[in-house]
Each structure stands twice: as structure tokens, then as C-alpha cells.
Length: 390
Image 1 (cartoon, rainbow, N blue to C red):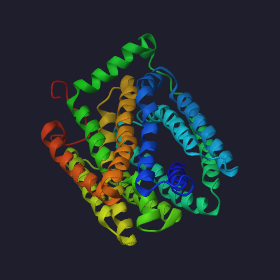
Image 2 (image 1 turned 90 degrees about the vertical axis):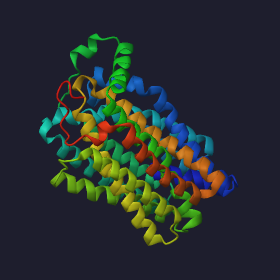
Image 3 (image 1 turned 180 degrees about the vertical axis):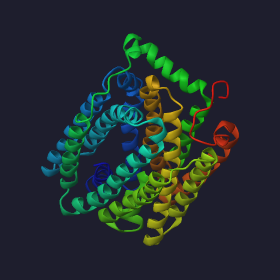
């Protein structure tokens, strides 16, 4: 759905509204911004909700909202009533739904498996997600080429499956202490916990700033349509290449999870992510571009796997919803605001300049964070430190 939405918005901006490449690129950036704003506003609420109520119900309700948006996109596209304001509005709705999906789903895993199996569980969960991210973009490109409403209809079917799957899980009762605490107090406690834990703060903000500056996803429609000239099918393949690289790493970690020097390896993976992004930016060979994107996805999954495992294991269960919400806000800020940054940069220095600048910036951020947060470098294993060693 997201792949189709971005390509459709860019195509409408260019073909229907007659905008230039720079103006249409900026519109893609605005799409990221309108998805982020509801996340920014609702994240504190979403974290508290995930900690006060059964996380299955929270996730299922949010998925149902996303399902309604997919059906609306199917209908308006089929009847040729799509406009830029409508696409921006539905993008904002998707952002609002996702802000409740992420903390509730993210906080479930640690309740479903023993702590010693959590790294493997996160790897398996990431593998399932990445398989969807391989098939989804590739199918989006094919379906969009066959008929513009089709990717949205397929998304509606998959979201229906997601709702049923989440509801079928065993009940996950909320922590009773959270239900006795005032919601505003819970919000403050969650923020204070992350701020006081320099290790968690470093992990969350590293992803925030590296991907905020280094992401190239928002500009893939520009590359597909006007630089590499591969159309919507090529866009789907490029998005799938990123997911394919990520899946390879996730599968590897599900069989042989990392166990030593996890902090340093996370820093190096972010630096590789930046270098691969810059390589994609300058490539004009489609095969090389796909290879660079696969490396982007592999490096990103390497970092995500380590960070998610560390954050989950360093956070008490009664705060996991709120910490997951804060982490999700950082990820969303890096992705959606990163799209805004990419679109703005592309309107000034062109798509190639924006992508290369972002890749180099991600490398610089990694070097800075290695110095500012030595706690990350000192993380040898996933196990949380003993009391007094934080």
C-alpha cells in the first residue's frame, strides 16, 4: 500500500498536476511529513494505551483502521477520484493507525517467549516481516501496472488476515500497576526512563539521525520514473531488493544470532548503510542499483536486529509499551521526516545529490555517536548490565 501510494502521488503530481520533477519530489517529502505529524502527536498516548490495555485489542483496532483506509484507496482509485489532497489525507490516516500498531505489536514479543529466546524470536519475526516486504513491493509494482486499484485491494486482504491473526493470540493482560497509575504520570515515567538510560537513548537516537539524513526510500519513485526509467515494476523491484538484503540477514540471525561485541557491530552496520546509500545515489546501472539497495537493507536489518534486542532486554515489561512507542516515534521520525528531508534536499540539489549527501551524513552521525555514547561501544552481549553497572 505504501509503495503504491508513493508512486501514485508522484505520478499524479507529474501527469495530472503538471509539476516539475523538483516540485513532485518535494510533494513526496510532504507525504512523509503528513504521515509523521499524527505519530508525533499520538505517540505518548499510544505507549500508554499499549501498557494499560490488552495489546492484542489495541493492535487489532489499529489494523482495522488501516484496513478501512486501504478500502477507501481502492474505491477512489477505481472511480478516478484521486487527488493530491486526498492522498495526503489518507497518508496521514495511515500514520495515525501505525502509531498504535507499532508499540502494541512491538511489546508483545517479550511476553510470548522466554528472555533467553528473545533474540531468535526477534530474528524470526523480522524474517516474516521482511518476506512481506519483499513480496509486497514487487507485487505492488506488478499490480499497479495491471490496474491502479489492485495493490490497495490486495493490502485490504492482507490487513484482514492481520486482524484475525492478532485476535487469535492468547490474552495478554495489562500490568495491574499501570492501570492504577495516572496516564500522564505514565507518559512522564516512560520519557524519563529513556532519558535517564544513556544506553537506550543512544540506541534510539542513532537510528533517528542516521536514517533521517541517510534514507533514500522517498526518492525511489524519482529514480524509477525519471532516472533509471524502470517504471512502477522497477520501483517494486527496488523496494524488494532492500527487503531481500534484510531478509538474508534476518534468516542468518534466526539460525545463528549474534552474541559478542554487539554494540560495535551495530555502529559498523550503520556506517555500511550510509556507504551503500551513497553508492545507490550515484549508480546509473540498474543491476548495480539493486545490489546497493540489497546492501542497504542488509546493513539496516543488522542494526535493527541488534537495537531491538537490546531495547527489549534492557526495558522492564511494565514500560515496554511506552519505550516501544518512543522507539517507534524515533523510527517514524527517521523514516517520514527523512522523506521530507530527502524531498526538500532533492528540490534543491537534485535526487542524486540528496541521496549521496544523506549517505555520507549517516557515516558522520555514526562516528559522532560512537564518541558521544561509549555505552554502545561497551555493549558486549544482549544481556542487560547488573545493577550499578549502567
